[in-house]
Image (cartoon, rainbow, N blue to C red; front, side, top):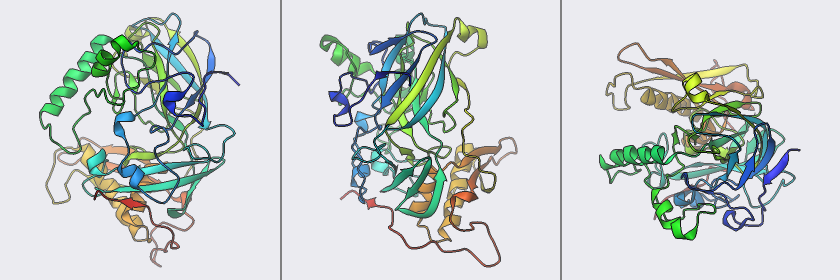
Length: 418
């Protein structure tokens, strides 16, 4: 096993650990450990809400989830010799739930969760159709996930870190805050908001000195969106065996990782659409000196997917085009086309006895494939959702005998604001 350089004690909160991570991006957050190019190491990660979501049959915890606290990230880890302009090579050697802890109150101890976030607390890809909070608990058995809240399905998880990235430079951080602030200013009262500005409340900044804490907290970027440094990309194929190339913006690169997922569908469409968990990730790092200029990688990451994805071979695909639910034509709107494809899949699964919310939760958690299938045929963009048929305990394909009915089970927990 690689050396463990960031341990977490499951009996303690993230902020009470021997080594303190962070939940904001800022170049002045000091590294919590240092490694050399060529090193392999293990990192423990806490579920993104640090235990706020419980293994029960209520969705009140999702409704009230404290978004100002996320994501709790392990790191930063400085790589010796890394300089701005380099490319950092990160190999994901292994990733999984909390080792040797198959039961307990923390997600990752043999279970995880998927949540539909309410519009008033973040929303999701289909928040106009699903404005309330819902939750599904998933139990792990090896690589397989099942849920008491979504009957008659089981699938092999495609486990991966939802968030990994390098620290921004001061200049890049200022660029993020300026452009996102300008977007917020176009509709500052929007619910959910257009972007999340710096928020000092609940900021965790590692070992930033107390004399600088307030200033750094007021500048530090939230971790919710993906950006030039990687970050919260939620790429389901970034799993065991993947190699990622990150741009380096600060000396040491300052790599951080967290937000582990047992499984996820393309798009993580419910916002908390993956099966969220804590666990471990084993990484190997190396450098390509001057690699950003050599390969033209200035504002993005590139990666090579791993080879451990579930081998599903039969799919049922649903298409959508860029026309709104009330019939308004949009010009090559691929986002809308994917929403419509997801809604068509949800409507189809409802014919088998799933509630729309159960179907929505399933599309977020199961390893569905999302594709842009046509982006040039004006005026309609076409997107597709590929649903693996083998995850169901019954034949989900259309047939002359009509849809089977799923056995009655516990409905997905639901919570509304009072």
